[in-house]
Amino acid sequence: MDTRRILEMKLVELASRRASPQRIAVFRALQLGDLLCAVPALRAVRNGYPDAEITLIGLPWAARFAERFHRLVDGFVEFPGFPGLPEREPDVGALPRFLSDAQAARYDLAIQIHGRGELTNSIVAALGAREMAGFCPQGGPCPDPLRFLPWPETGTEIHRTLALTDFLGLPRAGDRLEFPLDDDERAEALDLLERHHVTPGRFVCVHPGARLYTRRWPADYFAAVAQDIVDRGFTVVLSGSADEALVTRRVARFLPARAVVDLAGRTSLGVFAALLTHARLLVSNDTGVSHVAAALRVPSIVVSCGADPRRFAPLDHALHEVLHHPVACRPCTYAHCPVGHGCAHKLTPERVIARVRTRLVVPRDPEPLRFPRWRAPADGHASPPPR
Image 1 (tube, rainbow, N blue to C red):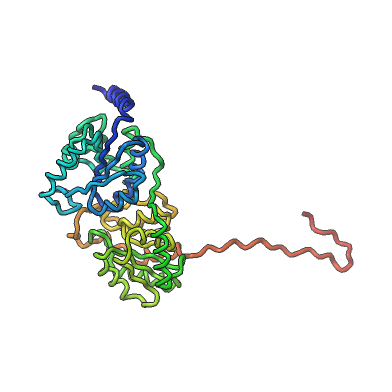
Image 2: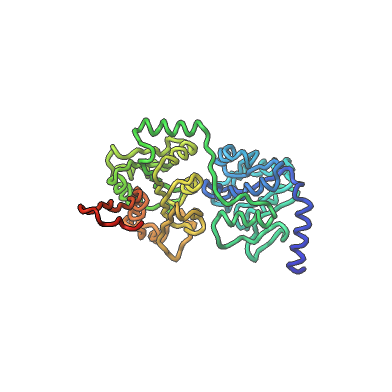
């Protein structure tokens, strides 16, 4: 069957079934940055099926994500992991109950938006939905050419996920990221700044942690950048999870106590995000917080180690800069680098400092042009200059 005929069949079938799914499962069991990059695709799913009950299937932490994005998803189901997927240690004993509950939910449509689908398509198929859609490997098994798109090997993560919803005929609502905040989070953030005597707009948030060690720029490099920020009259606010507190302490010990506030493990994600809206700049590894900054339009300098700097770069290049050192082994999936971590160590602090300095310069208003006022000569006979 030729490609044109397949496309014609796809358009006819999708047109007849566009409004039919009432219970939809979206599978994306990944971390914060990955889920934020999928928000534009989730908006498209909601636009395409405004009355459907949409359930996100994800990692345990994503229950809070589903609550925050309640406008896009109606419910959440925890994925217990699966052998071969690296995002969490699989709870094999919980898998039978997970699958039986999913099958009892009788989803009309299950969308695999997790990745290429080599392993995840089988997992999503086991949910027992009436129909499936998603990605499939380039040149690999394709469950249904009408509903499965070969994984795009180029483009940003945002646009790769949108390629699937475009393929399914779901209307886009832009490619911007978003991160909703509530009034309590905003108030708590301001209270936190006041308690630590930090002036809004006069601090830089430095985030030296990341889940994988291969994604971490060295702590002493971050410390050198932070010291230069302090030397320019700004306070440094260190951020991170409780698991990253050791890293932030290593950075803080190089800095004068009066000029640094270490908040690692002391805020919720929402309060941190609200606090970030008052920062002059974020300096971070290529991790989830960089996408929070992109969603909130907070300027950032992102240091990319290990990851693909183009795939996960923020879309607004004027507001955000991604710095990296090119190496042949990038991107990698190692937790610990086996070859010396050149992508991190060869990106010097001086290079990052130079870019941070340009972001911290306060632009001056242009001076108005001033011309000398004309004065008549003492004899009073000269004419005024032409206007």
